[in-house]
Amino acid sequence: MEIIRVKDYETMSKKASEIVADRVKTLENPILGLATGSTPEGMYRYLIEKYQAGEVSFKSAKSFNLDEYIGLSADDKNSYNYYMFDKFFNHVDILKENVNLPNGTATDLKQACLDYDQKIKDAGGIDIQVLGIGVNGHIGFNEPGTPFTMRTHVVDLTESTRQANSIYFSSLDEVPTQAFTMGIGTIMESKEIILLAYGESKANAIAQMLKGEVTEDLPASILKNHPNVTVIADEKALSLV
Ligand code: F6R
Image (cartoon, rainbow, N blue to C red; front, side):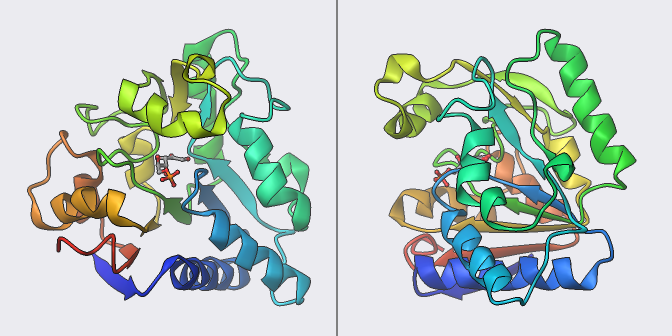
């Protein structure tokens, strides 16, 4: 696991965008695993800048997002589908048909999970997966206690995660109680992973991930068993390491 210590959010975002842009340029048909939340917003901003400057094109890229709320339609402002188009896809040349997120309004949830994993497999697997980390060490929506072997599945969101994500909704009641998430098994099959973290609120999770044992109690700790992980974190997120 390589650790890149940066001074702040902007530097983290820039560094992440450089790594992703490099893979997009180098690979013939790059398969990107993408995340939402506050952490990767800056990275998307820098990737858009690179696209606008003619440095990178996403025409041959495919993307798979980590997760999506259950019960929100693709055009709901709080859906991850909406976030991705708003913050990234609408501003670059990725083809709409190459963009994939779990379908938040699927009726057969089990089948939707199987289909999502199959799609990733059919695409040849994820070349580079971008991850954020939850204050409790979750990756995707894999909360503490989730078996490492799980593939895409439905999760009941914990109160702390709903609370953390409620800033995007007008009230806590509106935050969905369930979500689809790629499982740890799915995430660990990615050929390369970059995990981004900034701010004090992540310091504890980052310290446990880097210094503690590999345990399902801290989902991100499994990344120590992956051969190609880069953590890009700012001083504050690394303050307890
Ligand atoms: C988002 C995701 C989550 C977030 C994590 C951190 O797709 O899978 O695991 O990466 O909750 O969220 P932020 O970046 O908002 O602190």
